Image 1 (cartoon, helix red, strand yellow):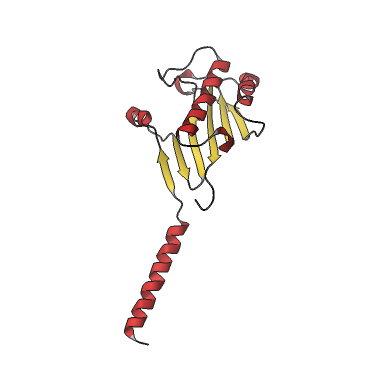
Image 2: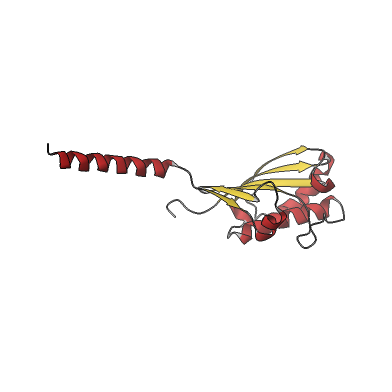
Length: 156
């Protein structure tokens, strides 16, 4: 076999191998709003790996002031879920993309009050969910929620 043909075949095999390896690597995107970047948080608001979006925990802070809303669990839960909705919308997604949430409550006895608010954010297609009581939530929050969403379509 001619040396040029061997070199061309070897180059083709190397190129195909590199393409196959690149196709197997997940696409990872770290997502932060300009406000989050300016605040220099030591975490990303969300991380997208291929079609899975992992949202960092959200608490009931007012987006204008950055302070925790007053009024107890119902007000905090409302603001927390609104913050999740807003973060998703900012990046072209919606609450219907969420498939799993983890809820952390300062007092597990407030679970029914959280559930009452949570129902209003989903259209009878509730994500899988788990909850636990946790002390020391950021800013003295009563609730923190982190979610996982499936976004985009295969082949996009």
